[in-house]
Length: 413
Image (cartoon, rainbow, N blue to C red; front, side, top):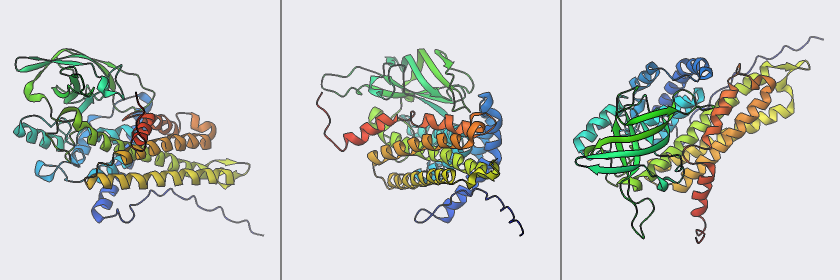
């Protein structure tokens, strides 16, 4: 009896856009981002992530040439004039290779452009779209993370300038950026006002790879999310002209640029949460695809371990969870592009997608066995990076609070 030939391994096939989200333009954009992630980003991630090294400026410049820092900026200002959906579509593909590269796009998209002078705003938008105005956003403090109303960094008026003093934390890419957006308090709330009253964003313009006068930075040593450095910043008399007080945060072009201060944060946060969900899906998808390949490669007891039902079913569960989260971020991004607030939905997709990414990458390590607990395989990088997604842009607990507060009356203080 002739022995059956061993079947050829099945190569993991990345997902394609399905109806109703598919358009030829979106499919082309996805393919371009996918090829770039595979051919350019992934080799750099494999080389640089184990060194905790920063992505090279040449990589950022290559993304800028593709117009990806201006995906959501109108064509009239030099951007691609696309929506949250396309922004997240590209980011998922980039995060599949290296989470930080999917994140660096958020440092464009009109961030740091909402100045008081319309002409300056238009000029900065054009620079942002070209990737020549890439920033860092500094909201959190040692004692103010999810509770941004607790920000204590002060901005005191001195003639035509504001003088900023305080300590900020979790400022990603702060040294390499062209500017740092700083949320500071110009006054204390009056009786009966919201705790957020008096908070204003300021634009601290700087040279790349240095800090401006009055600002110093200490690198925070992270266990993952390598590719760019994250800083704790000390501001001691940083001067910002009144013309660089901002009317809003995040640079979202779908928001009212004159909505002002703290109130303008919400839509930007909703977009950031969907963006985080898409990035989490990218990381989890990487874990699924690598695990699919590994289960065919690794032989035990005379068989590829992918022949064993328990492992096959585990892979199936992983793939189903990733597909579910992707379908959800597609839906919520669409709602935002239609002008919906989608606050609960943004919190839901951020919660579900990031918690999914932790489960899936953890299972991927388990299915890799001992090899998964080495730096010889990419799966440990996915596991480290996925863990962060449940924390930044609002922890899972904060997302649960947002959702439940819109479903039930708030507890009486």
